[in-house]
Image (cartoon, rainbow, N blue to C red; front, top):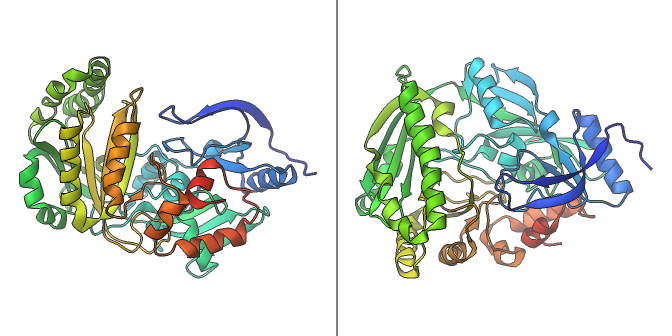
Length: 439
């Protein structure tokens, strides 16, 4: 049996939203690639399955360890910054927040980001996390090389040149083909974003949706249920110097109103649901806001209010119809919803299990305040998304199975072939992976 240097502890673990929990699981916190190898070898010798966790921001059980949990919080350093090649190589446990600061200090930036930065880089790419912008792909497509610890505990380097089939799949691998050790990211020179945030009538917005999507670098909007309004955000790259919000304005808008005040409204709505439609009318009253700041400060925002989320990628051309169906469903159903419906857009990529694989995509995300029953609402939304061959964000709640998902990804069989090759004994599986990929 393997002697292992890194020690384990029996601990309870839960994710950010508190809806995924495990008690008394063996947790290891490696600080080196060699220790990750040892943990995998130990697990295989003891016939146990392994899952790695980052910041626990997934709502699904994708990282839920049933036997051996690898906590990557001690494995979060920068390995190399190459300004000539415009790449940065980092350990897999680094959070995007830390990564963004290091990039900025070096005059660099990621070309696109999601709207939160709590995730680790490994968690972000493994779940197909994305931002918005029809000219830009998700985070996984910014990766140009990786090192993986496979089920036999060997370390494999992969890229478009080295082990390209494994690389192709591992960028959005759901943690099912190996433990990610390091990733090398293609980066760009640091840039600023000019921001306009303002409410619009949702029908007027949808009538000119293509214009909004195509005339802005990064466009997204939030339809406010029980109203005819959407909150819009237009981010465009600029050579202008930063004109950030004042400290007071930032605190008032982003911390007080978007977090504490919104959280209080959610708590009141949870206690007295029939008040939610009246409370919702306060959201579009914020008015127009303009500012300019470093890209990483604009892309991601602080999230204090906890919630459950489901997000689907559908063909971009179906967005208007699909959202209008969601609007009608909400009106007819009697649901009381205190969270906006978020809509974003990305370019296609060629990664087998990416939500944007081989198609330009629109994303429709729905949320329910923590502690409220999300199932009826999410199932109704999912039934609409199924009409468009919708692909669920792997880290957000859904009710799909391998049988329902296989036909939605053109390269599904290619991914399964790679998975069967590198992990035939399913060392890196768990109940969620068995549900969405099969045993």
